[in-house]
Image (tube, rainbow, N blue to C red):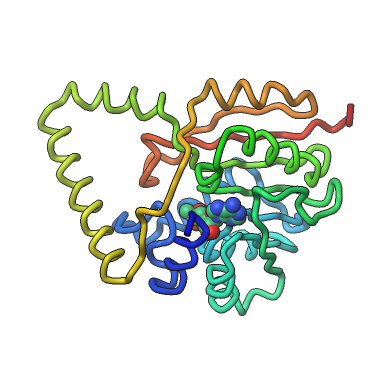
Length: 250
Ligand SMILES: C[S@@+](CC[C@H](N)C(=O)[O-])C[C@H]1O[C@@H](n2cnc3c(N)ncnc32)[C@H](O)[C@@H]1O
């Protein structure tokens, strides 16, 4: 079935509530908070044209659309897009595109978008070559001076450092483990009840060196790693990469 099949099941069977890494965060503002964090990094302006790639059911797209002139919500899962289209029907400035990000080129003109958001998506690619090719393609469709935020990337080096520190405080570590397993098994229970076969989800784990080695091959852009707002649910193990396309084409 593959990753896209699982996201189709999630959208059909659970509508929106389980289709991101934020279920049971117990923070009812989690999407607003995520958007605010993205906005701080990209600085959306009212005249911007934005691509939300792998935008899923559109929980973040909704906030982007309220701030800019035009958003393209692209995703590889057709049921997911249908849910987004229904939930966001009052936003006239969003268009919906069924796009598999492993199949390039993307169907957009050169230098078309002011910003690209690709949030909590690239770990569903099959290998690092696909990541590299995707970045090249995102640079093509982004305007000179535009920004690409590849968000919420699972980083093995970041999570190892976090757990190493955490184990130094055994009681806190124990309590956080209890919370983690409660959330994990609650999510699993919902998957089972909703008929979602999450065992089919396959993902890549990155580290900062792998990403830096790849991004350093692009002379047309500069990049930096940016931590997420600490209140976001996976901020201890994931991070964003901000890529800025140079003003001058080389
Ligand atoms: C965890 S959700 C993230 C949704 C949204 N960006 C967010 O952060 O709330 C991952 C999304 O990536 C999409 N996706 C996974 N693999 C894809 C692919 N090869 N092409 C296009 N979309 C893909 C899934 O369909 C899903 O909607």
